[in-house]
Length: 321
Ligand code: PBG
Image 1 (spheres, rainbow, N blue to C red):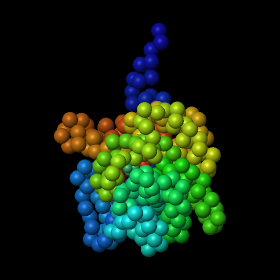
Image 2 (image 1 turned 90 degrees about the vertical axis):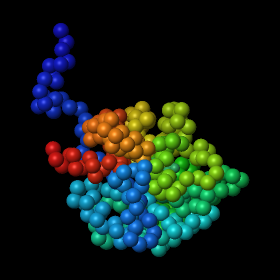
Image 3 (image 1 turned 45 degrees about the vertical axis):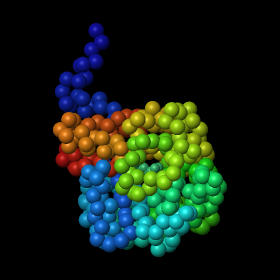
Image 4 (image 1 turned 30 degrees about the vertical axis):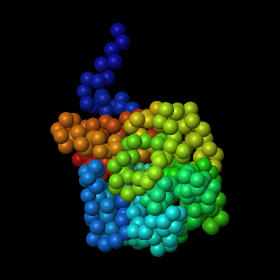
């Protein structure tokens, strides 16, 4: 008889036949950095995650480095917002300062920036508004300005998250023309218009003041379209393709893994984090095991890289083993 249980008998044989594993090398940790001083603000819907100003950030960075987490993904929260999000390309803006601060004090930590406008625009949309909608091509011009400003500040990688068509080509050309030919792009290639971003929008103060993001982010019902989106970003020169959110979109992660010869990332988003934290706090689930199992499922689906608010928690578990 075929007995699949033979290879499950002890932990050591299970180790030998184990197909996937989650490691610290897979993790990117998002950070919310707010303009101002002495800020260390809890985010109610994301227990354990805080908004820091630059003068309070070191404690967090010391921990990230001590845990051997390879990379951070930066989100900025500026004091000044306007119609266009012009603070995004201010060379002295909060993100530009943060890049310089981190690269100076933690030179080995790999610094990635989220490239978007929603935290910087008065209306909370991811670009310039014309006729009540995001104007694609006008926004591209500003994306290029933003990216060059991050590059000049010394960022290691940029990650455009706005789902504006033509973004990757625009960024690649802008970087190549200014001498940043070796600066890679991680594309939020397949980003759905998702309710799972709720806690993030509280954290980053980036909710749209009118309407929603359905004219630029993808319809959660679509799977074939994800390949189309990823194909464009692949052709335009994205170095890494990302799927976001992760947990409800494992099929999409696998589709990309099977169809593209690029590293695949996924974003384990704020709502996914909040659900596990909340159920864990209530004692309804074993938080640590559910966390490890859900991140492992992303690896099994085909993710090479996981962006997650759990990065420090996961690293602590892995360091213990
Ligand atoms: C900015 C951006 C968002 C997230 C990452 N970059 C919010 C959005 O698109 O509304 C969400 C991250 C998360 O929920 O953890 N465009």
